[in-house]
Image 1 (cartoon, protein in one colour):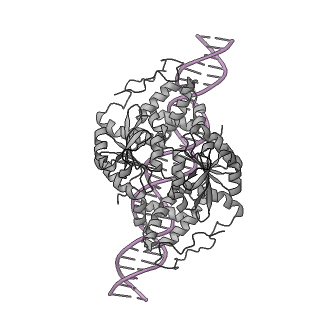
Image 2 (cartoon, rainbow over the protein chains, first blue to last red):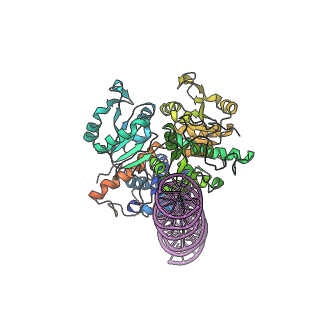
Image 3 (tube, rainbow over the protein chains, first blue to last red):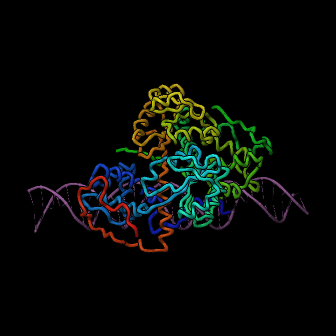
Length: 255
Length: 255
DNA sequence: ATGCCTTTGTGAACACGTGCACAAAGATTG
DNA sequence: CAATCTTTGTGCACGTGTTCACAAAGGCAT
């Protein structure tokens, strides 16, 4: 049943819509760039275009945080940076652990975007004993046996899973049992977690598949043909009620 | 203007809602797993829980594709795998190039999830001449000078950008000029592209920030205090109309 | 001071996505 | 063949998100 409660429920935490929360980091990034260029104020129009959104949407988003703008002028960049940071909880230190130090895990450990915000990589964890001690991004990898200890000692509440799919659920369970309540999952699996634990999923191959869909449509519009039912009437596929894993169904069906 | 048209317009391509398209890969993965276990049919309830969604939603999603189920029985796994694959355009071969072979680019090149679907890594491209020739994931890295040539020769329409943020827009422009019409962007920047080009963004640090927001709320509910306005009345921050890049605004403000 | 000009903040309409609940369709059993 | 049972497909109501359009607010010039 409760398999993979990935979505936030309709909680609408303190009145800030989920969609708005998802855009705040975007605004924050744009604002930080402005701040570094010592730009004192910015209008909703300018900031919106820098963040790649509609200006009305941006103003409405900010209105959920409060009235932080000055009519006729715009928003004070530094002040807004601070307000958004505070709202997102970035004014505090978030120790995170990364579990699964393969190619992706190493990439994450090296990713500068983490440290620059309030995030601190507290530990890198891998199940391979041979990796223990090896420094990645300047941090020695620790063995999975110590997971609970590490989470407990460092007060880690956010975990990143970059293990193979097969290990993800088990790692997730251990993280949750150790006290982690937010998980960022890079493994291509649906994680099942108890209530109160948040899971966000980043799936590289899914993004590509979505792109492929739109890409197909673009070229498909010219050749035109795929609209009604090329060669697949909705007959129950009597092709075989029990098929081998490799599927006799054609894997490639050129136009 | 037109900066970063990341969102699909209200196109609603051929009647399939965007939200549904985004879930199809999820269903496909669950179905593939069932197929490998030689499960012949599956009910909407079972499949939904495997994919971590509501069963009504799943049925509605499938209804956009056609009537591919059998009432009283469920869906033929193999048949559905084929239909979804076809709908997503995975029955054809999609050559992709990955630009920026740092930690992340290497991780992507090694990621099995690409090849397993219709995606084929046609080339790895990096700006560092020292990397040219070095094989990553069995594919020799090529220099950025050859980008246009590679895209043209291989008919690449999907590009993956895993460069540093500073190089992303330039790489994007060159990819688009060379004929790429779909881009998966891992660089933390808003890309600006002409109409007709799709951009999807994967941003590791944004996901973490969203988690931090919810995490803060969880613990914040207990300490309670952050609700109205701790210490920041909406006075125009006269703290200084021109601030240095490092911001005098407190970067950390403990409760 | 007064009036003009810019830009915010938001009410209201609209579009989109979700979930319930149930009728219709088909399998299956006696 | 009829009755029953399962499961799909979908009409409908509701909640969420987006966009428009404009009044209110404030700066600035005269």
